[in-house]
Amino acid sequence: MTLLASLELLLLCIPILAAPSSILDTGPFSWPFFSWFTSPAGFPDEVAVLRLAPFSDPAARAFLVNSSALPLVDFDLQESYAGLLPISAEEGEARKLFFWYWPTSAPEGSKHLTIWLNGGPGCSSLMGFLQENGPIMFLPGMDKPEYNPEGWTTATNMLYIDQPIGTGFSAGPASVRNEEDIAEQFYGFLQQFYTIFPELLSKPLIFAGESYAGYYIPFIAHRILHASQEEQARQAISVHALLMNDGCYSSGIVMQHAPTPAFARLHQATLNLTTAQILELEQRRASCGYDALLAQIRYPPAGKLTLPNNVDYTPYECDLTDLFKQWCREANLCFKEEKVGQGCLKENPLDTYFSRSDVQSLLHLPPSSWSECTSHSVYKSGKDESAVYSETLLPELVDRLPGGVTLWHGVLDALLLAEGDRLTIQNLTWGGEQGFQEEPHTPLYLGREKKGLWHEERGLTYVEVYDAGHMVPQDQPEVALRVLKYVLGLDGL
Ligand SMILES: *[C@@H]1O[C@H](CO)[C@@H](O)[C@H](O)[C@H]1NC(C)=O
Ligand SMILES: *[C@@H]1O[C@H](CO)[C@@H](O)[C@H](O)[C@H]1NC(C)=O
Ligand SMILES: *[C@@H]1O[C@H](CO)[C@@H](O)[C@H](O)[C@H]1NC(C)=O
Image 1 (spheres, rainbow, N blue to C red):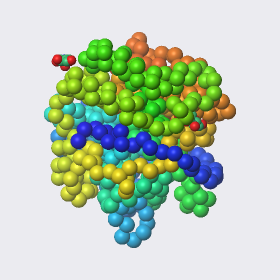
Image 2: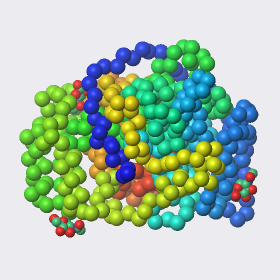
Image 3: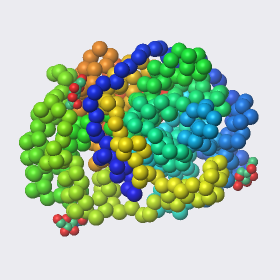
Image 4: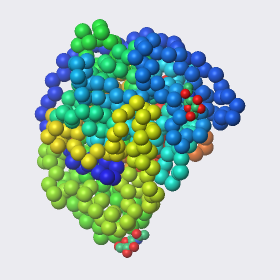
């Protein structure tokens, strides 16, 4: 199935989430327990090969992966740890998440632990691992994985996790109803993970992810922040920052429908749309009340932004995303909503690679069928029954996390639109004020090249990345690494 094809199923939501409050603070950092040495002769210079000091718990050894033995990989890689861990300590717990832990290859990267989550719902984070920010890249058109010099392990310890249950290599029956259940299961998994890898507990977490992970991540971070005193006494997990690209945080009206006509006009030629189609979209934008909504994007905002008729409901004729994508597909056989102008893709090696039994056994997995995105809902009822959108959790997270929240978006993403992030941000109240007071305008340069623009106020950073679609780290790996380093405090923007 195509990437994120189920994304449109999501956007429902109404009432209120009760938030008990408790304080969780950043623990002391622990210093690297690794030793580094530079590449032995015969390996690419950039690949610093890292030997791990063994984790203290002997159970950790069962998860050790000889990464250099990954099929089709003909260069040396640092050792990693992978396998399944249950979401609770209950005996016979059959519900397990898959993890793959990669220690950083750079000494300065050992301070934090960065968790990467892809979206869907139901898409494996191995997508991100192999095609966005992992230490190796295996993209359509390549015949084997290549070393990725912009891999995020060059800046931080990385932990890729397949969740919720029903996703990727995770195991057991799907049982979540909503994002709170997802956060609860994730928290349970983390407790099991830290029991086996206690040395990682002192490393403040960065939660990074894409797309539907824009829903998962704030709920998970909120769950950790509001852990009970007893839970905190047992394991003090600290969250440093959130980093979400091309995410969903708000209603379909905000993230997709209202901004669609302007996006269509901007990319009309590339998308091969007719002027009559553009005019039709614009006419509906007016009649559906979206013009009035968009007119409320101001810096600073004039007050809370209101949805058309003040309700979060999209009548059929106002589902502009669906109409837009249908026209795009009709006008261009190779239309991919992940990136405008991407063209026809070669076959994707992802499914084949992770379906290999040698790969699976190296990762300590039983023989499993694998696909990048599940065709079954990961939610018990078939849909996410969350009471609120993740945007409602963002203000507290921005205010309380030492490294704040960074939202970033590829401007060629047709699945979720950058303008939707701007709408979302201008309606948030954090740090005592609503929205950005100033319109984002600061260019982001890599060398002399302008690669996007960015803006930060009161702990919330927004970055727009040029020439990038939905999967920003795949399309603009250097920019992505720079944004990550900014969040880690290792670089500026
Ligand atoms: C790891 O795999 C590589 C490549 O297959 C092999 O040369 C090496 O001996 C293995 N290391 C260990 C410790 O098994
Ligand atoms: C803005 O936020 C308020 C709650 O603070 C919400 O009721 C309203 O629907 C939001 N507006 C949009 C456009 O999402
Ligand atoms: C553009 O759309 C027209 C139909 O409107 C179609 O005939 C033509 O083949 C399309 N061009 C491309 C490059 O897809």
